[in-house]
Length: 251
Image (tube, rainbow, N blue to C red; front, side, top):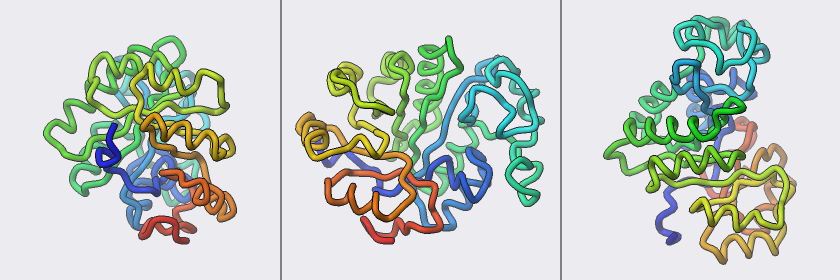
């Protein structure tokens, strides 16, 4: 992949503005945009009837008024849940968000999107297929296409099978000897690592293969400065109130 093929900004708002507003909701996206962010990360999974919606956890309890495994529930029932009241009274009544709604928001504002494919256990490949197919449809004809990432290799394989032209990134919580080989096999253009995993040797090895080097979840200045010194390419942060995306590494 050529460097010129990377259209994304350095700063990425984690789950919208996932600390200041209920994560993975349109309210969080809007708040991140108010802080100047032009790229957002979100988590996508399938409802029981294969509607792609945003949620990080496998279960509903932490970030909604529901209970049980999110992927076992029909969208008509998920859509009635309160996904904001857990955060604060200000956001009470905020609904769960579909990927389609986020697509309309991002396309209308020319925002970039990093979609983490976050499958319910057991449907990794199918989730990758569904997310990629929907992205291909929703962003058809758009110059700024989303970046699809996942910790789950089967999810990325499903996405690759359906929409090979979409950019993909492998998420890593720990470094393995075969991490770069796995990313190459899945035709990934980026490695998205826990920020503590990056060192000069790994950054150089990834870039030698033409891959971009991104980090999650970076919320302090010292870590930003370390990643700057390593010449990494992107930062996913909760602290949209602390870090300014207006220039490459400013705060």
